[in-house]
Length: 207
Image 1 (cartoon, rainbow, N blue to C red):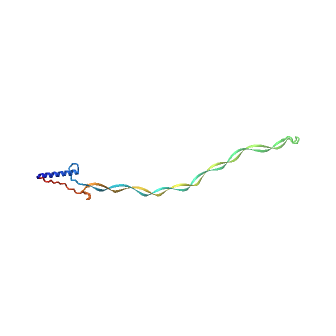
Image 2 (cartoon, rainbow, N blue to C red):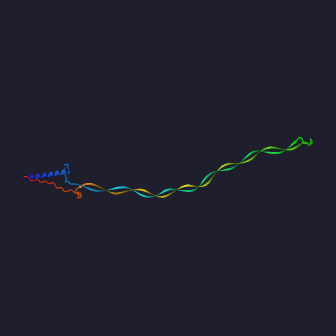
Image 3 (cartoon, rainbow, N blue to C red):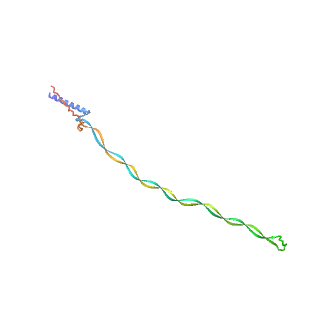
């Protein structure tokens, strides 16, 4: 009777262990002692590098132009009309009157004077070359230096303040929160599972 009771107790303990392993893993393999898992929030920090654009005022030199009036000497050409004397030789005819002796046919001396003559004027034309001067109008260019005002652009450097975008790298820590499953023995007390009673079986002796 005692040996029969020991056999029934061993069978009961083996059946209970097999049921516990099947409930924990469900894979049919021998199971280790089952540890309950609970969710836990874990916060870690990640390093993030960002590019930040800073607007920085910068003073630079800029070239500008201003207008000025300066006197300059410029050549100016104009036409002047002049009277130029031109001399030419011209053939002209002038009259010359001379007293020429002319015999008189009848003088009243009845031929006893030996031939009487009388002086009569005789005019004749004589050609000759004479200089003749004429004045001819002729334009002539005349160049003169005249002072005039000329507009010029004078460059100059002036300071100008502009806004310049300057990039820079900023490194900061960013919190990352995630939920993981941890064993209840390592979890906080609020997440710890209630203790489970160990399975036990007793065989009642049969008489």
